[in-house]
Image (cartoon, rainbow, N blue to C red; front, side, top):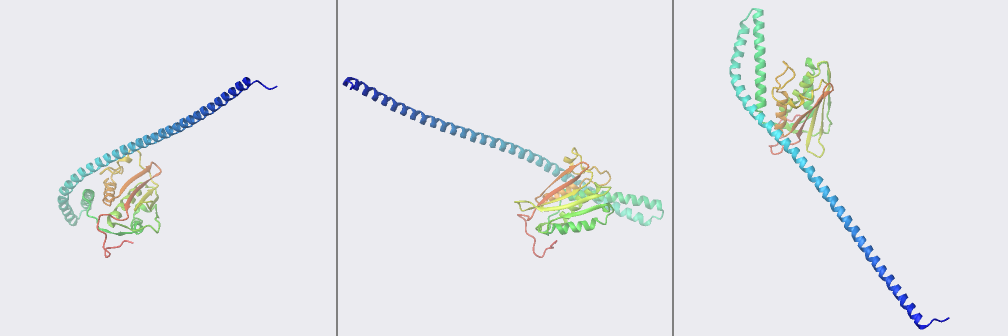
Length: 316
């Protein structure tokens, strides 16, 4: 049955309204989805910015910590240098005041010894001479610490230097029960250094290690090229009694020693001064009853200093 025109018109209007409503709903949904995507994008961007801000803040905090640590180390080193400078001036004055009269005492005691026939008298004079020699050794240590001589640079092979030092020490009674070991790669480059000073550093460290092992043990001298740096690191490791944690921070102090009657307490101080004169640094690691390792590093070349001439002695 056909509908009346009025009904058709009403249905057409209703259908048009429904279509218009549907289109409007779709448009609204599309706007909402666009707004949702925009909101999600803004949220992600905000989260990224927050993460970046946190990373920047963490980086700044780490930088502040590093600066504080470096500042603390700088002030500690500055205090050490000031203390050592004052000690050096005192040492120079004392050494010069002692050295001249000491030479007169030596000469007099040697004359007395030549003219003495009584064994007891000779023993007394000999004891005085030994005491004077000990004073002289301390004075030389003071002068070496307070005023290291100018560097006499040459090309130095650490392997050869270690071999020469070992050859000398193996004949000493202290080292008869000690095994001396060398771990130096053959490709290790020669360095520009003062051979006498570096030899003295090795000698001081080996003597300290030997005194820490009265019952025997092993001492290892090893060396390697420092990665990504034009430097050499040398390590002297022993299996001795070690150093207590409360004493370890003081080992480089002049005249500080735990070996009463066996040294002046200047060996490590002088060694550190020699290493620093080569633009290097020295540090000590130790565990009681497990041994000690002394590390020092040296540049392969002494930048800013005249290179050794070809005719200079080559220690190789």
